[in-house]
Image (cartoon, rainbow, N blue to C red):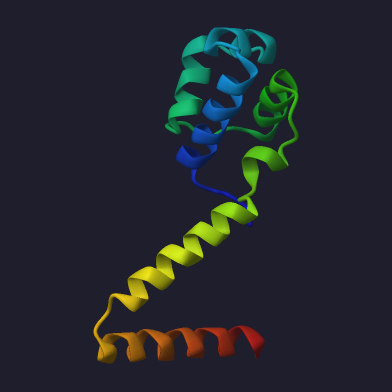
Length: 110
């Protein structure tokens, strides 16, 4: 699934950068950005052009998929969270939620 939330993308960049042992200044320099701009990107407070994403990925030696898509483990964790919240609902509320989900899924199949 494609990520569109700049904060999530920024968090992924932060984690990847820390794994590589690089500083924000180093990534910014290699990517041809100001250190302030790169810091804002990691905070998720700015939108990036495709060219910027590609330069950052090149600087970190990663593919755009690594920051722009949600991993399977993230999806599984999200599903487990939703199921836990559903199970905590009162029976009537749970039935309503399941009906809504059923209608939504049916609309996708049509």
